[in-house]
Image (cartoon, rainbow, N blue to C red):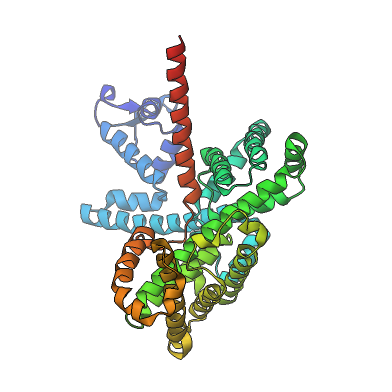
Length: 457
């Protein structure tokens, strides 16, 4: 045995390693350590440890941190290097599986927190799996931001947020006097800018939720009307609905034009398939069900998807053709969108959801698309003629059309490239772009005012 001055007592080992005296005693009793004793009288029979023992204690603490039991630790420490690596590799794989399970539970818990237990249960039953619901719904980071903010802030913070809403409501109250879409866009952009500082930019589904929120008879809504006049909250509700509709019409217009262009030369199933997927994703996104766009989810939720798509197109047709909506939004800004086009879009989405798109295309789909494309081209040609100062009746003059059709084709390609160059996507950006422009205008005016102040001085 080494001389006593070279040995360390229990107290010293604890100070060096962070282990407790009880742990050292247990590990000694289980054979993981080989403490040496002085062999003197019972009162002085102390346990002593070498420098190697200190390193072994540190190794045991590390392996305990990894979740290994004492028997596994003893086997690892006594095994040759190769066996030790294999044992640790097996344990790492077990940890990975356990981590995936815990992550899944966290996702499910977050989803239940955001949706509410009842709604999460119903959605999971529709999809056939809580894991699919949690994985797909977790894509909407904006909802997570909103949920986390509410959970981590005090009543005072929420009151300050309500005051911010009240401040932005003053802009809507002023815009009521103008009733112009450009003015409403600025108001919506300011609201979304304020919202995004806490929760991120609102998704299209949340725009519809905001419409419903300002229609609701709540304390905050009543305060807005008391402060800025009866009907201000209803006007805000209409503004968010208009934002939702304008965005939906813009996306649908993009999809339809790309579909028509894809079918120009021949029956193009790839273009049709792409359009069908985006129609379906758009319906889910705009109706507040982004999680159903997940491939695994959509394969289990045919009936739910059908209901959502039907509701989406019904809302579009009801509101887009409403006179009050048209007083703000002009359908001329969406040349591919009209009643028959919406019927075609809904038929394509429904066939895709049912897994019958190819059959629908062969039975009647391609023929219907070609017919709709010709109507759309006639409309584009009318627009072209008006731009040239020509009478639209020229459309009936076959000889004149034949002579000038090449000019129309050149104009059409330039117009399409300018307006529809980007591929269609189911997202909402118009109001965010408006917000950027509006911010730039405010900053410019502020700089001008500062410059004027300097001149005055």
